[in-house]
Image (cartoon, rainbow, N blue to C red; front, side):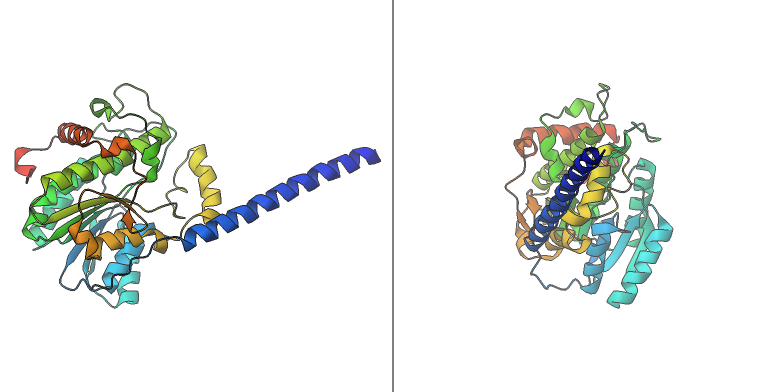
Length: 335
């Protein structure tokens, strides 16, 4: 009996040591990762400029909105949860001293919502200097379809933003020099191939993380082709990866992978403020005003983009397929 207790004591001791060592390693890695996080160094003010940020009621979108409001911009929080967004707008107005922080209803998973939002913006706003396409969802175990017949992750992360950018492109061109900033992710690197004819999983091969990765690859490909279309117009377009950031995107996902990440990201990841830096950099920096069609991380052009999302031919095919998916009408095109 004593030998048994001694053995279990040893096993538990080893387990405790391993857990302790893992926690220490995560803390050290996280500290180094946060130290290496890029911060924008540009102090440009945004007085007289109008910015739209989708998904600005939490996380990196909220922190980007706060920073741009502090720079004097007219900031429109385009969000699905109006109560939450209104509370955030009040907080930003108070902390920044800028009362030009507005809230507008937008659910990027609904094409009708996107069209209604865009119509309101075009009716009310005289200019649009920066469009930040940041709203997104993580993974979901069960394949969920929207009222438009789209897989939910693709609808929220890609199709809605694709349509919104097209609808507001005329105003962006009229306001040039202007910018489009697209929040993507390094998760796109897990994708080995992408079929533009099956972006909505018509082949039935749905997997939660694949849907997330594909949506982020589409974000980059869409930004790359839009940049090509906007050459010589004064509209620059760039995509970015914010890095591993401790936000509620992992909390809202119900897959095992994102649940695990949710528990370790506070140790390993950036803060929301750090994660927002590349968004801010692309919105305000003088450097970003002269660069278009690139993929950024830590406030600089990344060398980690996969060959897949650097394929200009594939970017064009994804764009053309997306036009058909969202039923983009002739009067909705501005290129």
